[in-house]
Length: 98
Image (cartoon, rainbow, N blue to C red; front, top):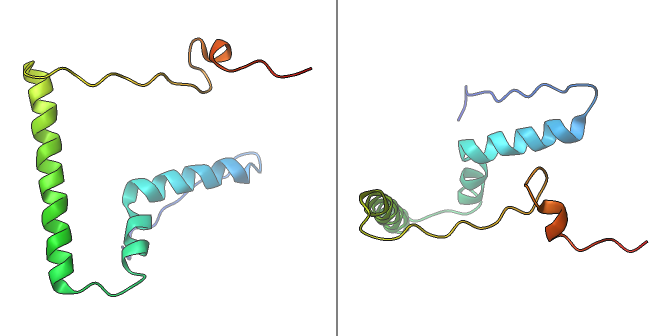
């Protein structure tokens, strides 16, 4: 990871937003996963087993996505978005007491 510098601009002294952006970038780059892996020594046999299991998971996920695209299996149902900007989000949340 040395040499790959992550840079986040702080706009209008909004450090909270900059931290959110930094965490998202770190998550995408896999820095958190690498830090967790480096906490303790991992035996070479455990590493091989983990990498093999990850490869199997990736292959199954790719095969599942291809089967959905080919129409062999039904696509999983989408979860409703309950958050900012989602249509009907205000109706989905219970009203606040006055």
